[in-house]
Image (cartoon, rainbow, N blue to C red; front, side, top):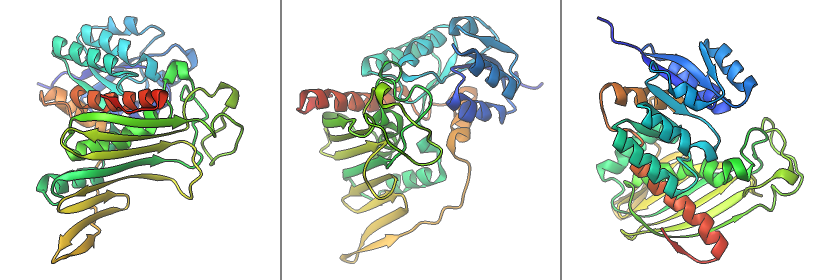
Length: 348
């Protein structure tokens, strides 16, 4: 007898839903998208028509009343990650929530606690973990090739790439700028490779020197309104961990640099690892050798993220991006903003 398909509901039917989550579910024969929800009528109609979804809602609570729905993706603006996730878990649904998990560690902890109480899967959408390159890097780290990590530099830097659409630049809807948008990706990847050490303190600084004035940027990013610009365009953080390690996070949508960078560099007692381009640095016979591992391909990106989320539900496996790890990341992000306001390091 064929197994029952998992019914899927989408809360927040904009770009990340239509461009990432919904194609991922559509590619899985064991899933059936049953409902979409968005406060925007045009967004929900577009999503429903594009993926042949039968039900549309403007209120996520109505979507959650559908017993046929087993799984929910929360793809709303950052400010609205927490409550739909909590409501979905209380309604007995498994949840894949977009990054950042929430806009505060307090919200993230609430979401994690609800998942445990409901005994449902809660995974955070940190897609950078799922590329073949990231998985190979994880194998190198777990093999001991790098040794004990004591320093890492995580960089998600755009020269001129301020999102000219959606809620990205709204403080009310997004709370944070590139630190929440792309910095969270490279930080999560770095911490995952390091085994998620426990942070002790954060020193940080955020600024909006470029986003707050008119300007041009690269093709495809649209234009932004400096009068409505409410978040940072650059952020940097120095994170110290209880095991003695230190990580520097740099993140920008707009920075006067020669090229965009999305890379992590990890330094250990036996070697180093760089993600872009992929390099393994080793101490050999008193000198340094640099290897460029060849990638043999394989699935990755959002499609793989959705696939492994569904697999963890079907096989009752641990979530590949568990709430406990995302909470650590959120504590660090909170610390960067708090330190920027106070001008001093903060405990996290």
